[in-house]
Image 1 (cartoon, rainbow, N blue to C red):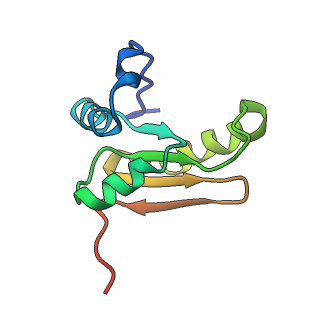
Image 2: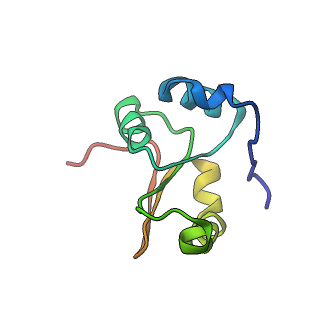
Length: 105
């Protein structure tokens, strides 16, 4: 799929603090896939349009439980992720918010 990059680089990247990982992802046009809710909070606070984040909100993240749902979300939301978005995948539904977050009036 165009624009979708899989990063399997050194473990050093995952030892970085979330803000450093976010900067690294933005610099290299990566999408962050995480269970850590801090990335969504950082995006909201920063006002940035990148990096895109896919949050998996499930207790059971084994591939046979939620893997197909995550893949379907990546495929369905590819354009939004390329432009900059926060995609939240949980066992019941998938939600997307386009970045940057604008204040609600």
